[in-house]
Image 1 (cartoon, one colour):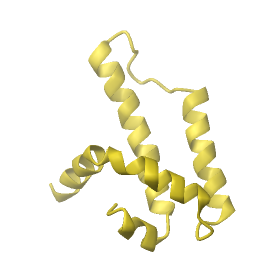
Image 2 (cartoon, helix red, strand yellow):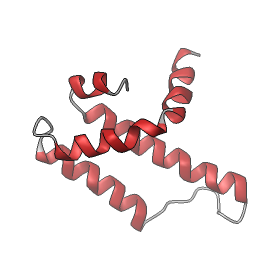
Image 3 (cartoon, helix red, strand yellow):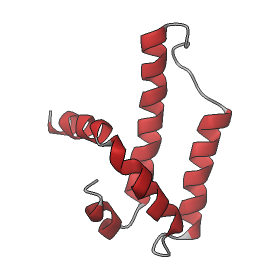
Image 4 (cartoon, helix red, strand yellow):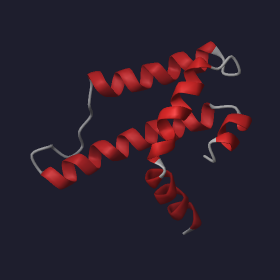
Length: 90
C-alpha cells in the first residue's frame, strides 16, 4: 500500500518535473551516458508511442500514455544523483 501511495504522490508532483529535468540535463553531476539514455527513452516514446490501449477509447487511451510517461520519468529520477533527488523531493 505504501508503494502505491508513493506512485500516486509521484504523479501529482508533476509540476516539479520541468525544473528537475532542466537541472538533470544541464548538471555536471550527471554522467553523459545517463543523459543520453534518458534522452533516448523520451525520444523513443515520442517516435514510437506504444499504445496498449488505442486512443479512440478516450479516457483509457490517455491513461495508457500517462502511465508509460510516468514509468520513463521514474527511471530518469532513479538515475539522478541522490542530492538532486533530495532537492526536488523525489
